[in-house]
Image 1 (cartoon, rainbow, N blue to C red):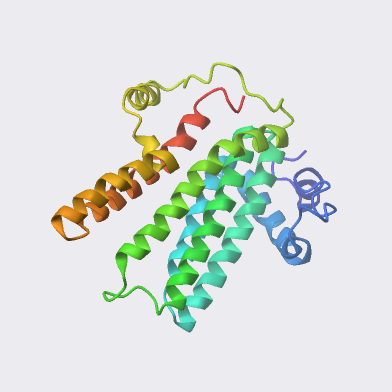
Image 2 (image 1 turned 90 degrees about the horizontal axis):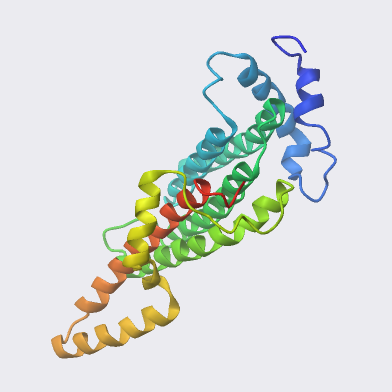
Amino acid sequence: MSVRPSIDEVRAVAQAGIIERRSAEHWAGRLYMRWLSGWATRWLVSSRVGRPFTPNRLTVLMIVVGLGAAALAAWPTLAAAVGVALLIQAYLLLDCVDGEVARWTRTTGAAGVYLDRLGHHVVESALVVGLGFRAAGGPSPDADWWLVLGALTALVVVIGKLESDLVVVARSGAGLPSAPEADPTSSVGAVRSLRRIFALVPLHRLVGAVELSLLLVVVAVIDTVRADLLATQVLLVATAGVALLVAVGHPVTILTSRKLR
């Protein structure tokens, strides 16, 4: 192939069989986005500016753009709605391009599949949360922020649980055996240390149903004695913090372990 590939060369390699996958390819991809993504991929694989954008970095950028759309969706204005639509189009474009660049550079793998699937779950869930804010009139100082925090925490807990299930999906999508290696030890020293800390102080269990229900009884007693809801509010804040830590830290430990190799 030439140093600067033609668009036909890019489509032949990066989009081979993609559009024909009727059950997997989004209708917008078949209708127009794969046409646009082919040109974007051609630019990325042949431009010096595009070289730092590895497939996984493009996927991370896709997630950031999607979360930006979810945040913007919280504002109940026409301009915000238009902005959300535009950001989601950029999100879809990046969703096409990351896989095309991976196929062109022959760097497809379970880690990329994992990030892609995780990104879709995170963005689509967050978008619904943004829609809920919009339906309630948007972010406001008068909002019941404890209710909001509870809803967001529930979302993060669900995402944290999905992260483990996606390992099997990612390995299957990459053509690897469904079961990872028995030793999932991280190859990164800092992450290894973090795993040891969690083994000694299992904060992540705070978001478990049994542990959380027992703690709820404890804080309910404290609330009764104090005649307020401060203990419950502290528990909710703590649960939100732990859920966020798990949702962010879990994929890091997975991506730096042998589970996706």
